[in-house]
Image 1 (cartoon, rainbow, N blue to C red):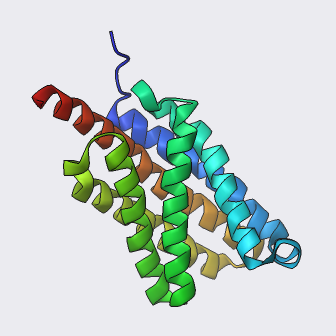
Image 2: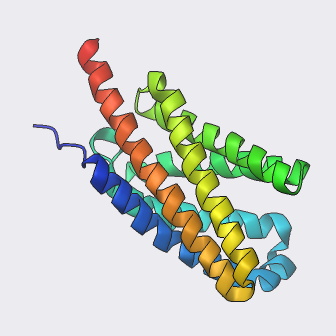
Length: 192
């Protein structure tokens, strides 16, 4: 008998709390070592390092939500592809159009890229619009709420709050997307 998919509520809670903690760790490196990282790794090296940290730490947390062929340790490959696609889309949009416009375009492109990777991997392409919408709303809410907290509090505290807010919302979105993608993939197989 196949292992059941964790419930939607468990997926959202695990995603939010687990990825929130991961994001807090990654943003702590920004709060305490951003200048050092830019000086020693360069702009692209710093962003690549942060992306790798999100993948390594996030994959461990979110992998517990996946059953079947993509469960751990294979989930690392899937999450690496999904998060790297998200990061490339986000960073490319932001660097080509800095400021709020680039941030919104980055959220849009990055969310779509991640949703597409998950939809393909789980055989749930018909769910792509739903997966994209969930990720875009969660990603945007977390990013812009976190940014507002950072602007309000400033300094290291603001950056840590940004990381926590971003991680809670995006993690909840990723948790929900993993549930929807797996559930759609299961029902899609049953219809074939």
